[in-house]
Amino acid sequence: MMQQIKMNKILVTGGLGYIGSHVVVELQKMDFEVVIIDDLSNSSLEVLGHIKEITGIKPGFEKIDLKEKRDVARFFNRHADFDGIIHFAASKAVGESVNNPLKYYENNINSLIYLLEELNKLASPKLIFSSSCTVYGQADKLPITENSPIKGAESPYGNTKIMGEQIIKDCCKANHSLQSIILRYFNPIGAHDSANIGELPVGVPQNLVPFITQTGIGVRGELSVFGNDYPTPDGTCIRDYIHVVDLAKAHVVAIKRLLEKKNLKNREFFNIGTGKGASVLDVVKAFEAVSGIKLNYVFKDRREGDVVSAFADISKANKVLGWKSELSLKDALASAWKWEKKLNLNENTI
Image 1 (cartoon, rainbow, N blue to C red):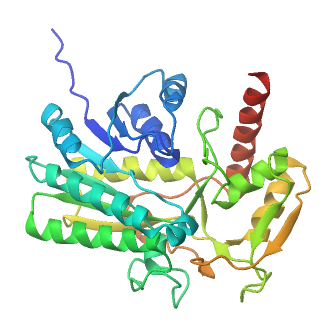
Image 2: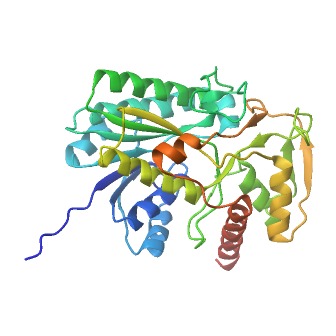
Image 3: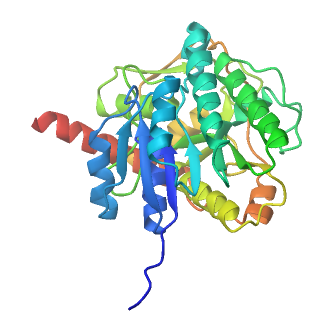
């Protein structure tokens, strides 16, 4: 009888969210067994079915609020056989964090602490942590390398990522069996090519691209561009926009690196971006090119917490992690537009 090969079992926290769901798809495509926990505060149970539509496999799922320490402990008492954990579950909007900092500190920090407490009980714990370029603040020099100084954060959201990284650093120092990779990613945009999963913000979008697509489809009357007096070529902020599918693939490469024991230290970190900066108006023009729609946009005052310019040096991810982005800004915007049109079609046929 042929011996059945055991699939690596990966826990994805926040796996029904925007980035998490794309990572689940890429993991399942690479034959990982996936279990998702999510509190559904910024996601939908329907995403489970959409993941199955893409991959043919429905991942395991439990509704868990990681802020509830007892529930986290009970979950790990039932499931202690994970080969790795990818941690997304966190609140993520810069603007909202400025207005509601305590929500961000409670959700993003407590959930990580309770997760690490359970990880420390495992024989060979492996963690991929979802961090952000916000840890660099307004960098003194561009592009931003992993050696760029960690600045005082411009927002409570950014501060939770700095604190999260420090907590992991301290835990790795105290527990040498804990293996971790921190991915500092820049600005994820786009959707899966199937248009079955994509970014679905609750209420008014905090991120640029869903605001653009909702304006294009007519859900929003106009696009607000926050600030046109920045010291950039066209006066608008510059960011490194990465296709969410490229970003998802980086997580698969990272977890495989830990599983195959290729990591050189028990805490590694990598920038995940394209290495190219695009201004808000660059993104607007690129969307107009792929959609054929002229956007109605208006300039508003600068938004608190926004840095002027941020784009990545990705040479370390290319050389050490063995990953590079493959999809363009226009690819990402075309997929986001395809996703928006499908959402609109579904709403109009209900």
